[in-house]
Length: 130
Image (cartoon, rainbow, N blue to C red; front, side, top):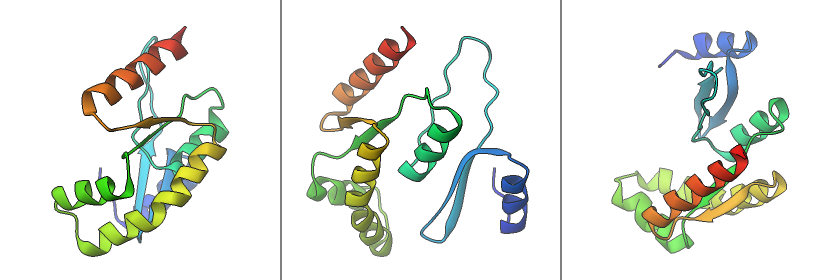
């Protein structure tokens, strides 16, 4: 859902987001989920959002997925057509995001091979369910 800034900020004030952040001048948020009983909620969010989720849901499983190297991250950002300014911002944030993920006690998964990373994440979710 896209909203103008006033609508977005009103939803923040109403507690309508499980997490939200302002990143590189843009507002992003995840509406409060209402999953059916027995189903998991999986969020693809940054470390700012993960910290907010951890505050309201301390039992949440946090997984930090990262590229195997800064050079590979840059290559992937270029490969998907990101602008030079966006690439520079993302690379500048990478180290601080990794540090914040460690502070959150997030489990780190290196996405060296997509299939292996997906399998590792699936195994972590299964383990957390037990």
